[in-house]
Length: 165
Image (cartoon, rainbow, N blue to C red; front, side, top):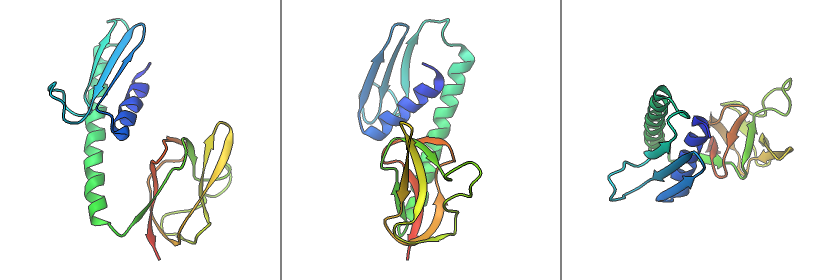
């Protein structure tokens, strides 16, 4: 299990609403605690017991820094959504890989500022070698694209912000 897997696990647990998750394997034991626990562990923090050879001190520091960055970014998102209450969020209906275009040599389905109507294809999400077109359920203007091309997405993860017509 590498750092990226651990970070993805932390994000998944935070979104799921679970207060505590324990994962034990041969050489690694991870406990992730979120929310109001009496253990003194901050939300999003994790405890890890690892064989000393499997992780270096510099790696531990980079994990802590990236967790702080992610927490800071979440706070900024909360502030912006309170200001933009009239915006509608289009979320991923499935887990997979997000693509803005149908092929590498094709133009993106939508850009920021595009006016869309109900049924327009916004993106495709690849799941198990199948490309699923994600269509708009409403008409409006694309305000923001929240995911980078070729990035993994989770179920119910925000993809687009749309200002309805």
